[in-house]
Length: 477
Image (cartoon, rainbow, N blue to C red; front, top):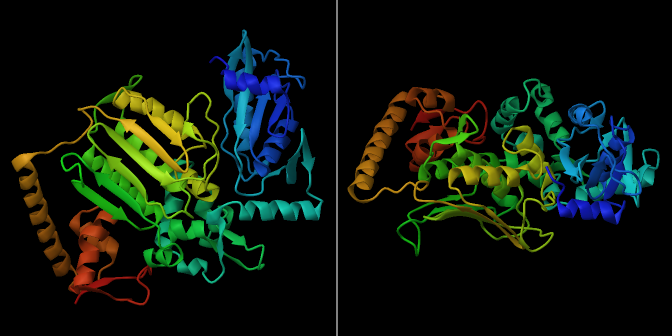
């Protein structure tokens, strides 16, 4: 791949607080990891392997490139080497026939350690501050106060969270690795590892953060700390002044993801697409990227309602944003900045997102496969993503077909509702009821059957004071 002009300009401008050159022509020099650590702890940065300190581009031996990449990825994901592990991948570029490797290091929400030591960036140097108590304290304070979602709520504890969601998160880490460390951790240890339990630097009190509340809390608790939290899903095909379908979502981020994905699948066709020789769901790939970006990277301090809108010729998302610039972002020049790193980390660990910046590349790739178009990413106080569609992408149901489908759905819902009431003549758990109805989607079950029956008084909880208890059961009133 040819070296982009923007990266060449960085090399020509020389080393600075955010740019570092390393020779590493046949293997990785040990101080590369010190630089990764210091960039993670400071403002992020760019590392170029195969470049001298004076900016002269050397030659990385072509037969060494794959091994260098492998060694780097192995070390950077080794908790004994780098903690917390980082998901970074060197990119191979060529300039004037010479190969170099480029590594983009984002800011980490947590304090990063390399071989048990803490490094910070100062001008062109990586400084070991481990034994400097004041510097370490300032670093921790800066990490905690940098992001709105790191706000600490000492009045709440781990027991206020939904344990079923944390169990689900642990199970989802299998998509990343079968022996993921979270699977052996208690709820509290998992939250600490994810940076979701912090100490308030102003009061000295420890507590769960806003990020943990948004990810794992009951809806009423989320509303109590962030009343404007909302995501709007809109389908607009015929009624252009209003909408044809809508879902206003005010729940936690994990179940918000489920509902947005379900909404997108309902209104977009899953066209046959080949990625090389493999059949893929380009629709689902696109939805995964734009939904995870919408949920994980918004500015939660802003009351602007985040939305995803499906129209005849496009899908677009909008969310409040802490902007690092204005205008269209281009794939070749895009420099990713973390917005809510603690939330992003959880999304990465459970397989709903990948490393920072990969979402843009994936969206480009699968949009071209899906509709043949080019997506737009517009940076500003409101971040906007636009995915072009063609006639084959949108699910359009008109006339009598719509009415018949609705009637069938209503009849099916009524039958299942009666089955729930009959089955719950004795107390039953949510899992038992779903199995009896042969339903797999928890969110669909809650929204369509459980919540309406509870609100109408036809069904009641056996433990009403603890609605999210893992021992909760439901019985006909």
